[in-house]
Amino acid sequence: MEQFRLTIEEINDDPATTARFRAAHEQAIRNSRWLESHGAELLPRALGKFIAVAGQEAFIADSSEQAWAWARSVHPDDHGAFVEYVIPTPGPRLYSDRGVRILAHWEPRPLEFDFPSEDLPPAKP
Image (tube, rainbow, N blue to C red; front, side):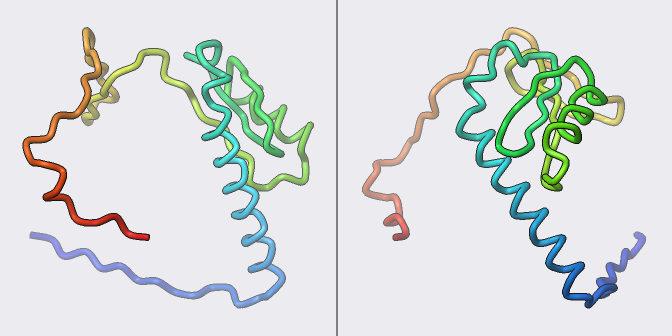
C-alpha cells in the first residue's frame, strides 16, 4: 500500500498579504451567512441556475460566467464573492467516478430514534 506524505509550509509571512487574505475570508463568511439566511427567498426560481453572492446580495444567472461577471461588476471590492450551481432536483445524490447520480422517487422522512431522550448527553452551553 502506498504511503502519502503531507507537507505544510508557510510560504508567505508578509503582514499585508495576510491581512488581504483575512479580509477576503471574512467577506466570504459574511456572504455565506447571508445566503444561509436568504436562500429560501431565491428558491424555486434558482433551481437549475447559478447563484452569485457578493456584497451580501444575490444574482441568479443561467451560466457561471454571467454570475461571475455580475459579481465583479457590481461588487468589485468583494473578494469573498462566490458562485454556486443549484441542483434542480431535490433528494440525495450518489457520487461515483462517472459523475453525479440522482435518485428518483425519494421522499424525506423525519428521523426516528430508538432511545429515550433522557439517554442523550446534556447540550453544551
